[in-house]
Length: 108
Image (tube, rainbow, N blue to C red; front, side):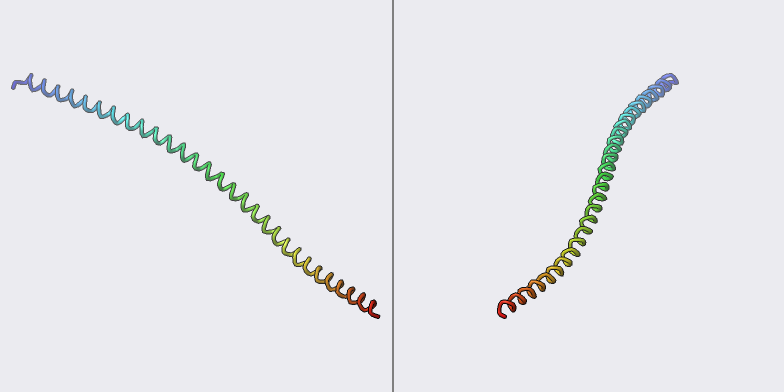
C-alpha cells in the first residue's frame, strides 16, 4: 500500500469517526432535551405537590383551631351541665320542702 492509499484510508477513518461522533452528539443532544423536558415536568409536579401540601397544612391548622374552639365549648357545656344539675337539685329540694309544707298544712 502506498502512502496515498494509507492517507486516504486514514482520512476515510477520520471521516467515519467524525460522522460517528456527530451521530453520538445528536443522540446525546436528544437525550439531554428529553431529560430537560422530564425535569421540567417533575419540577411542575413538585410545585403542585408543594401547593397541595401547603393547602393541606392550612386546612389542618383551621381544623385544629376549630377543634380547640369545640373543646372549649364542650368544657363550658360540661360546667353549665354541672351548674344546672346543682340548681336542679336545689330546686327539687325546695319543691320537696314545699310539697311537704303543703301536705302538713292540708293534714293539719
